[in-house]
Each structure stands twice: as C-alpha cells, then as structure tokens.
Length: 208
Image 1: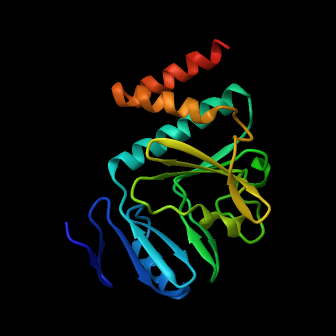
Image 2: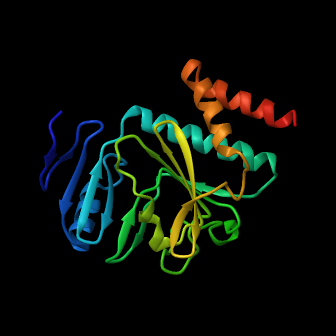
C-alpha cells in the first residue's frame, strides 16, 4: 500500500508515520475527513500534524495493557471508567489519541457523559500508550496534566508520573511493581495467547 493524502482519501501502509506542517484548522479538516475511522491515528502539536498507521502488534499490546489495568483495578474493587478510542484536544494547542485512558480517582467526573470538555473536565488519571514506531512523545500529555502515563516501548513498560511541569520515570501510584507484571504477561502472551496471560494474572493476584 502506498501513502495517499488527498481531499478524498487518506491511506497509510501499516507502520508508516507521516509528519505534515499545518495549523489547527488543517488538523480539524483531516479529522473531519477521517470521520469515525480509527486508522490512521492523528495528533496535533503546534504547527505539526502527525499521522500513524499502527501495526497489529500495537493493537494487541495496547489491549493487553488495558486488560492488565482492569484486572488490577477490579482486584482492588476500585471504581473506574475506561475509554478507547478517544480524542483529547485543546483548541489551537494539542490534539492526541491515546490507546486507552482510565478515570480512576476522577471517575465521578465522566459518569454518563458522552463528551468530555478537555478545557474544564479533569483529565484521565491514567493513559496507556504503546510505541512500536516511535510515534509517541510523553510530552504530548503535558498540556492535559495527565498524572500518570504508561508507555510500552521495546516490550518494556515505562511508568511516567507528572512532577511539577514535567514527566519523570517512577513507580505507578496505583500498582506497585506493575512493570514486572506487564513483563510476565507479555512473555506469556508471546508464548501462548493474551487470554492465557490475563488468566495467569487473575490467578496470581487472587492467590495473594
């Protein structure tokens, strides 16, 4: 498949990343053109529009990470809401589509909402990103003040927490040792299936 960007078509081969120069209005036009499509993903930084077509590995790993988070949250009997796909946007400043996001401490703020006002509503407490093609930049979440971001890169989970005006590597505020849990689940998933990895995690957690 060739890369095609026209007023009628937007097509990228799997794994491709395309950076375009453009303003907020250009970004909105491309969003409208894409409609409800989830591929390619699109994000906006000041003066730049990025498009990315995920590989199958991306979707599988993102789904596994989200399932891990849900198992751990359920084991704590923690209320939460999760969203995917979702577009976070601040007019003229930023637009981004995380793989998954979770409202944990702020779950009450989004209950029953069909739309989130990113200028007034709280940001997600946890965002999950899988980076297979060097598309993700942790600083994309600074405008939203997301407290915690999980970034899976090279099969390693990196946990970033907001500290002042920047992100720093740290332990998860919700699940101690989550990087090791993810490593074990990825190993099981690679040798068997993602369902076996999640079954292992449920059994392991319930046995504690």
